[in-house]
Image 1: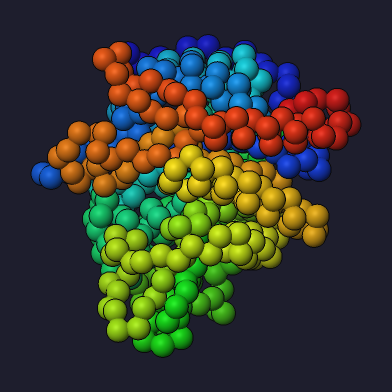
Image 2: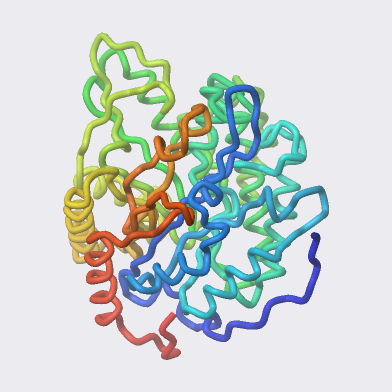
Length: 442
């Protein structure tokens, strides 16, 4: 059923003089895994994490769990493929209810507009000639409908992974490959990103806050030997979309030659320079056991994350390096927008403690780190589920504050000790937060 009903009620708590990331506090939040790749073909089934984790049914209680452990914000995604089932048609009923629950609990939503997949009606997905226009229309529709309820948006989550999986290694639709494929998807995402952010800003004005979020790529081992060209390329690729949207691709950019070889014109780059948008907060996703690729002498790497490269756990050293790198490169406050280890409860607690201490140390040293996000609230399912034919239970990743437990009533959420530790650090931070000039808690 398509709904074009009345706009949700106004949330007065969102109208503050000092924005949340400017109040001097380290904010603690959570994410709910929201990867959507709804397209199917032979040997590839739909990947919808909300469906797999039964969040569509359990959203009310899931947000309560986040509130119970002291989350001040939740990174949460709108399923574009569901709310926009056909061109020009919108079904907001489920999203209305979920965002109403955010209001009830007093948790700030930071909305992911694009966490991978596009609607099924959009042929060629990100390579569709009108992708950027359709994406901007969707973003503006969200901003208009929730203008009195939501002010914080991540237009495109992890554009580097989008471009790698969809445009380099042909793992996800539209299955492009190689350097030219990467650039094709990166340019499309960047244009959509710019048009979406500018459209939201027109609706919300100064109230809008944009949290840009990307995955991170570090390299260790044989980085100066046989792998030097590949490492240089992938380092440059990891920044490409954010550099495009912020107007940073010029004659000195490391990707300029590659872009021109892919047919990108000076007029296109001039458009990005003249329409640049900036992050209010630059989000860094860092997983200590996955974010650093180990380059080994004598091993031929095809490139991309599908090629099963070994990784190196650089712990908090890698985290600190990347937060500093993004703060310096983009001149904005930074935020740890995803982190965890997929491991035992004891190992998860150890990483939580170490990473929180590291972030606090950076703040004491003068780096403007404004947020910490444990990802995810409850366990999720590995993306390889899409290419498997096994039950979802065989793809479970133990990452969350709450375990997902199979039962005859569906998936149960069972609290584990990581939740208690997160609640301790989050509530301690909230208790020590300064009072804003408006007196608002949010």
